[in-house]
Length: 309
Image (cartoon, rainbow, N blue to C red; front, side, top):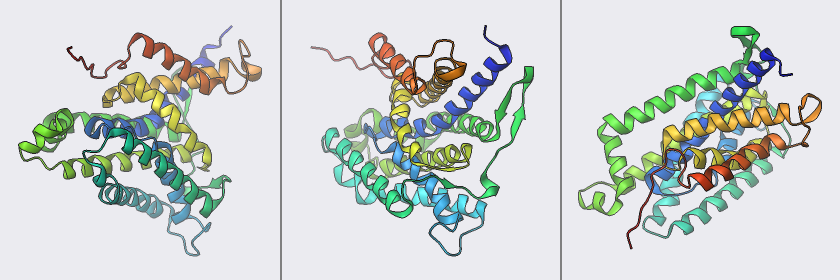
């Protein structure tokens, strides 16, 4: 027998977890939409954001750390700088090159980021400043509650997805980005600066991803290497929604968060209806992804590409 209040709690937690994933997933989809690049360093970039607060806001490395919220703001600002630097130093060199070359570069960058964090902090969990840990829960209807960090993530993810949709639809810069994404060569002929559009896409993407990583860390009171493993979950969410669809990435991430929470609670351990075994919560979204790909190869909202022979 499924308890209604417990089911609501699990559902709300799944939506909150999915909202955290959605921030990172939308960053992934934005890059693919504009550049056609699958950024497999997305999980490591989120981890950079999470550990940036540890670096700037605790005494783990610095002898005089910044106040907690100043460290939070500085980490987001550094994420923007990192996006600009990566585009200028690395990705600009690969404009016009085969997509596979850029994918390999993202894999290499992921390894570099992961190794750099391990060098600075080791692979142990690092606690956040008390001001940035939200142990409280917010009461909802029917006795359900939601973790404060999840509630913040839901609100922020809704704001980001709405802002990006309005940006692409109603602003000149958004129209330029859409034009570059649709036909890069034609956009260049019309005078569009591909370098600037790619730089803007990477900057926005990494800033959003860093915020997602920070909120993931806040939800567990600190940063850990487990954030790196979210990369494959994020990929599943984006493929489910459609690789080039930002609303699809948002919806896909919510679905993945729900499936992960349902799988963990109802199919693992003492609370399981059917005990499948440990780790099934992470496996269930991937199984669901396989089914979706078979039925809709381009995801729910992805652009279907039809080639005439």
